[in-house]
Image (tube, rainbow, N blue to C red; front, side, top):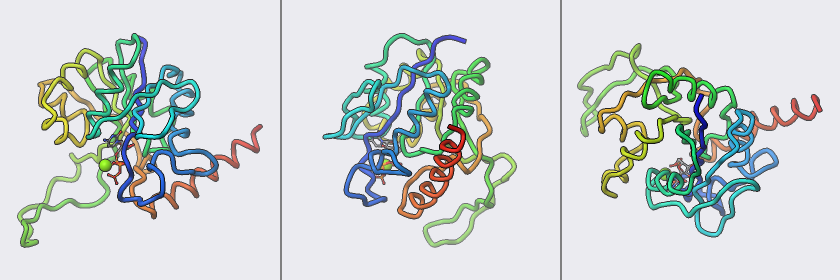
Length: 223
Ligand code: CTP
Ligand code: MG
């Protein structure tokens, strides 16, 4: 497999969490939230990690820090500019601290047959479309729906091209794979589970704290 570099986006403010520090730096089961992702990346053999940072925070030891952008994909673009050599790139949200090393490996392995590979969980809920008046206009076929997560792995040249767009388009992107899709690239889903959820609200933070404290105990028992 070609060399891969990792981009960890941590520059958001965490408005919906409402903590006193930016979300990725909030303490979670004994370490700042983003450190859980750094450990999983290292577990997958990804040693070059560029972190997009909010103002006033430093990168974890051994990582390269860059100032983030005003939108998530702008932070990805800023981090990619600072990355060293590597034909493959894996992008991950620092807000998904429950990610495993295995999922990083699976996402990268899936790049063999595509331009981009995204972790995704099969939809659990039925999804309906409704108008502004709450009137349902249709029910989607759940068997074909996936809830998209990170990691998202990319061939570097494809990601560079996909990110070479106006700031308005970058701001409209809720994930980077969409930028590849609109540029005509091929994207595949890599089966993941809802356990790799994004910490968004105080409720999510409590659930993550419980799950990661368990993991910390298991690790301590092994050592
Ligand atoms: N992110 C980023 N740069 C931005 C916005 C978001 O690097 N300009 C990162 C966040 O730090 C997070 C990930 O993208 O790791 C996913 O974003 P989200 O969960 O929306 O985090 P926040 O933007 O921090 O939260 P909120 O939207 O509630 O303010
Ligand atoms: Mg946000």
